[in-house]
Image (tube, rainbow, N blue to C red; front, side):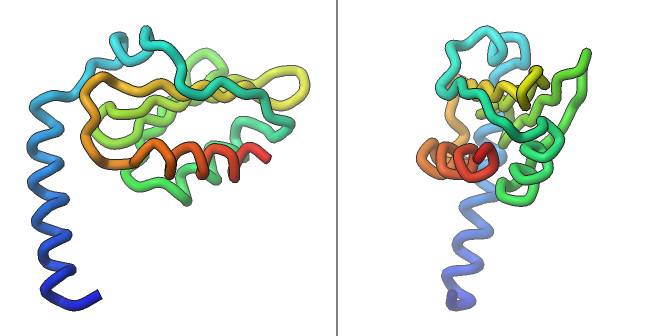
Length: 116
């Protein structure tokens, strides 16, 4: 990547972040949205969480009552990992205001890779 392209990417990311902060979705609103992905995995929730944190940018992790939540971007995606008797349940929800951070195809690929 040339220096010109790199500086252009950095400028675009900064502008996108500023715009996304204005239209971000609240946590409760995002949790109430219909899941885009809902799968079970034989892998432990902690393993999936570690894998997704390595693969995805700007992940905020919270743990609540046994579940792990990964918030991507400025509340654009919410990944909830819940332990189950045979591994874990993975639920992915998308906000109505897409911040342009992680495209859906990329997120689907990363979730598939980390849950198998």
